[in-house]
Length: 110
Length: 111
Image (cartoon, rainbow over all chains, first blue to last red; front, side, top):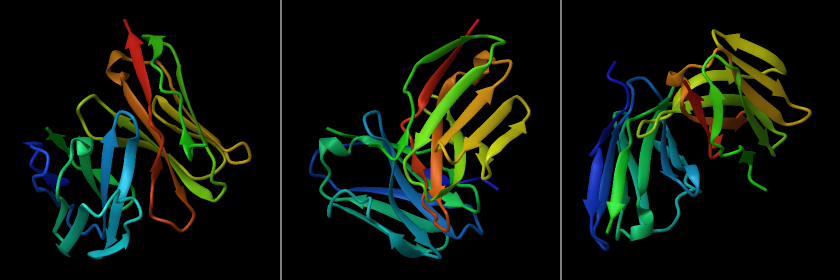
């Protein structure tokens, strides 16, 4: 199994632009989690899905953030419009038990 | 008070020594506890999980849990330079699916 796949690995964009991060979970895992990691706040859970249904989005910081999971093998996290304070590493994780993390997307908003 | 607290470090230990990493948590409903290792620029990877009070050993790693004191620790015996990384403590409520992470402790194993 290839593990959790995320794309792009690096994204540099300008403030105000739309950003879409993508995730392919491990086949057969029924949970998918999106995290954000910064030096100041550590690893924070943004939202998670169970069987493609959003269960808890209480960690989504603002309405500028949205996430979808149209099928069991694909999820997106969208930021529109992006701001410099959104700069972070965004991880997708899938489970089984325990959680397996993807390689992350390093987002820089200028 | 943060839900999961860890000393950010860095914790420096000489090669071959025992490294002791500590974590406290505030939610008494927490039932599952995990230690993740994260190398610089990489994603977290699970190294230990523990669910019951006491010790759990896996190779050079020992996880210790004391629910009464709301305390979980990770001991690394015979520390190697390759153990240099940030160690993240995570907890999960009973019956829940969310992990709450601490901000991590940076460990440096010096030659």
